[in-house]
Image (cartoon, rainbow, N blue to C red; front, side, top):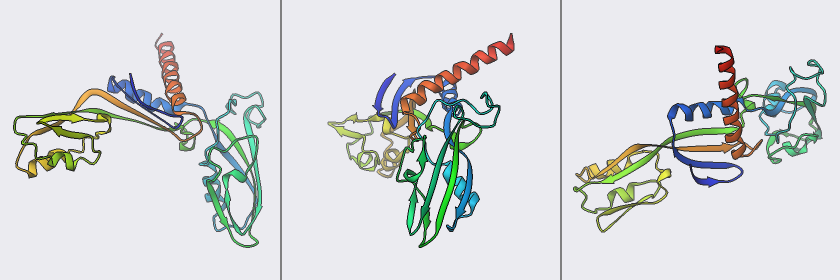
Length: 252
């Protein structure tokens, strides 16, 4: 595995990996336990948004993940307790834009400046929200981030090249250059096989450049903020392994 970029929010690497395995890892990200607002009790809502729309927006607010029990597995038997749920409260009066950071409780908001709703003068909003654990396979609000991949590109020049540089100018990612008739690439992983260089070369009356997908895949993980990009990869692998163990048990 060659790591291209690694931050808390984003991880990019490329490796010669089977597409079936890559897709299994991508899908397994939806089985990572993630915390999100699941229930809202509204006491006052003078805003322009209906209660249902407001509850939907609250469900999509990104919360820092916690190790809570799933409510269906908790000893409280679905009643809701501190082991399986966290409460967030908010009581504000306009004129203002209400933001996620104004909610008070034991859950931490990842992006405090996330707008919830606009209140006009003397309008009020008061609610109690309950956050629980869930999985992306059940609802999108529990998704930890974006996980996707594409083939690493292979770019070649043939004898038809006359160093006109039309392909270089056409490349939107600015990753190719031609020096003394030889092709040089930079950050080849950025190539998304758009074929702009090939089109520009054909307009020049040549077929001098070839862009083909290689066996290597570029794997990209973008975290929404509940957990880091690295954790998404590690926990996706664990979820896939757990599913494979379960299949083995069923087969036996």
